[in-house]
Length: 165
Image (cartoon, rainbow, N blue to C red):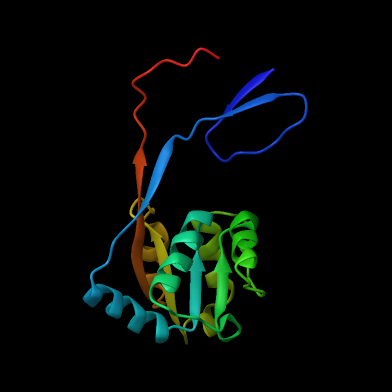
């Protein structure tokens, strides 16, 4: 049996898996001035929102390129789902909160459930240029202090050739 996957490489029993990425993720290059602005907002934040493994990768690359080490014990770190949480833990983040549903709507429910305490802090959200506006819009309506920045672009990969698998 043969399968195509656009998600990630892996080894599977009893099947030939061909990794066929459907999007390409590319980090956004920030000017020195923009990097300083982002770092100022990050230092003023007490909460972090991460909505994908790619966002985690690009966020930590940004920290590394700016020689920043954060004490994540001082932050409330919220991830959209288990895979994102696992990626954060791979970078050494120990405490990560998860919503009951791994969606922006699930994150909104988590924020609603903890609204009294979450309203008191500043949130930082590194994200993709293709992130849905839903969460940012809804958090703003609830007077959550949120700074978000696009850390990477997603591009569709156009296939100009035929696979004969």
